[in-house]
Image (cartoon, rainbow, N blue to C red; front, side):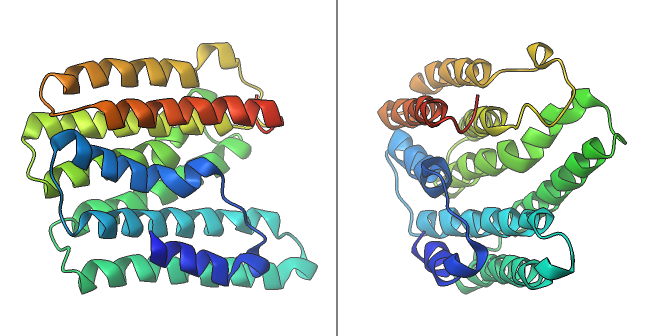
Amino acid sequence: MERSFAILQQFQDVLNMTLTEIEHKLCSAMVESVGRALGRSHKNLPVLADVIMCIYLSDLVHNKLRDYEGESQQSGRQYAVLVGDYWLSESFLQMISHEIYAQLRPLTDLVKSMKKGALLRWKLTQKQAASYELPLVWERERGLLVALCGRLAAEVLGADVQSVRLFERFGRCLGMAWAAKIEDKGQWPLDYAQLPTPESFLTEADALIGELDLICDDVTALVRLRDFIADQFVFLAGEGGVS
């Protein structure tokens, strides 16, 4: 993750962007936890985590365009576009440099899915999409991101198809819980009682840990990762950042 965070520090003052603990750690922790659960390692695991993090940061910065409205904010908009494109280019440069060709398709699909998520969120603000589609936004913005960390790490480590699918589903649950927790509930006129809760996704993650425990060497890292997410939710609620 060193490369992506080095770029972040380089543009920190320009973007005025601070990452949460979840944003800092989740991608790399997901990839590392898969390796520990399987009892295997591979030189490309840190690279995969960094590539996915660069894709996430690119999307995050591009989405900051909404913060720069009006002619007086044009320089901010330009920086957001340029830095976001820089991160996206960096992700593909790393893939090529480390010859990660087998994972190129799912990584490019992730980029497209995240952009579709941003478009769907915009449609919701314009009332051009149904409110029940909000969980689909969560999946495209965060769920698929963490799911891909689990899937690609397992594939690179040579896991069987069943294990790959379980790690992918586990990652998706963590990503969905994250997205559901940080959602601004004052933004949409929705009945949030009808939507999945962060806790429901963590409960699903618990069930998947039980399944993975039957086929993995040690699921301790997965349990710790799930607990890290839950602990961050408590911290955010205490800070008043999310409800």
